[in-house]
Length: 39
Image (cartoon, rainbow, N blue to C red; front, side, top):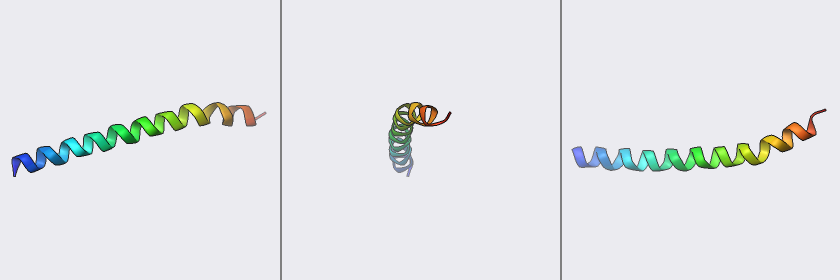
């Protein structure tokens, strides 16, 4: 049961990192566009 929890934690960490990286990339690419569109 411990190994299963560890696996779940690792998968969660991977998903979290992927989500954070994707969110950061989208924010980095989208934020300047939003700033430019606003007067």
